[in-house]
Image 1 (cartoon, rainbow, N blue to C red):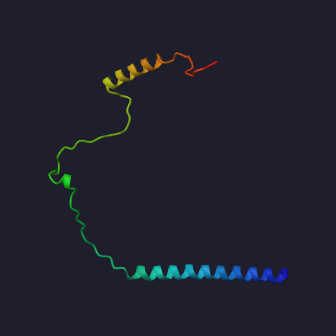
Image 2: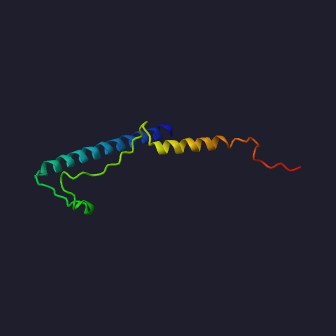
Length: 102
């Protein structure tokens, strides 16, 4: 009985492998047939501009936003950050914050 099940397993495995390779071969041959039929034509693609850019002419100066952080900070932001740091240092009263009832 073990021999029959082993032979059946090998037969099914070989047939599945053959079917997989046949499917891949057919797929590759179909792709090559399609690629031989494709004709390349050159054309110019023109897209309409965005509605908000209709009045912008070539050479007009536009505002740009750069989100990269730099070490040079705005002095107002720096003073505000210093005040926040000072206030947060005063909050360390170390009384726990938990209410204990006896």
